[in-house]
View 1 (tube, one colour):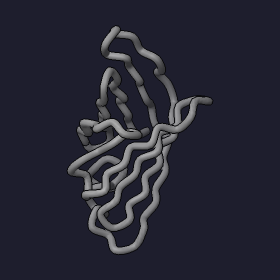
View 2 (cartoon, rainbow, N blue to C red; view 1 turned 30 degrees about the vertical axis):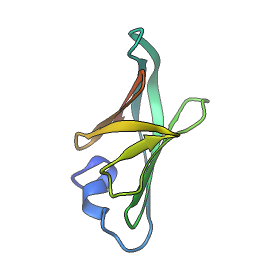
View 3 (cartoon, helix red, strand yellow; view 1 turned 90 degrees about the vertical axis):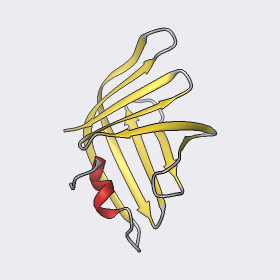
Length: 106
């Protein structure tokens, strides 16, 4: 889907809303205690609307994690927590407080 995670780099400056969805593999880790909380299949959704980018990550039966940026990906948040986002092409890592979520597209 493009050169960035879920095609983000190709469509970050789109004038109309763009939505995408794919399947992948996710690993959620509590880095403070070194314990994996989830490792398995996940659904990855993306919505881009102007400068706003939102990723929805659904793992198993748990609630979906929502990561959002209002400034074209310069600053990321999960709820009120600031998130470090590392785009690696067809995979990405989200890191906040004591948690790390690695996401890889199938």
